Image 1: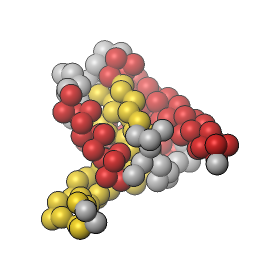
Image 2: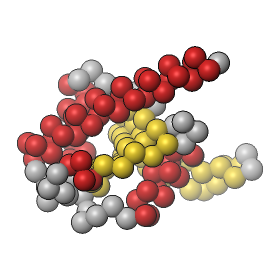
Image 3: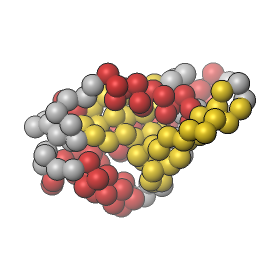
Amino acid sequence: MKSELLATREKLNQLSNVILSSAIEVHRHMGPGLLESIYQNCMVMELRSRGLRVDETVPVRLYYKSTALDKTFLIDLLIENELILELKAVDEIAPVHEAQLLSYLKLAEKRLGLLINFNVPLLKEGIKRLVHNF
C-alpha cells in the first residue's frame, strides 16, 4: 500500500513538472496581460502536443451527506484525470482562488492541483501548488 502511494505521488510530481514547463512555454510566447481564456486555449494545445489527456471545463457536482445538491462547479482543466489545473490572469492570486482550487480538489477527490496566474512578469511568481490527501 505504501509503495503504491509513493508511486502515485511520483507520477503526480512528474505530471506537474510537465504542466509547469508547458505553462512556462505559453507564458514565454504570450507574455502577461491577456485574457484567461487565451492562456487556457494555449495551455490545452501545449499540453496535448506533449501527449497529455486534457479535459476542459469539467463539471463537478456538490454532494452533502450523499445527496447531490443543485450546484455544479467547473474545473478549468483536468489533466490525465489526475491533476486539476486552475488558470488565472489577475493582478495577484487571492485567498479565494486558493479556496476555489482546494474546494475542487475535495469535491472531485483529486490529490494535486496547480493554480497558475499568467498575469505576472515571471511565471514562477504566479504558481501555487495545493494538495489534498497527498
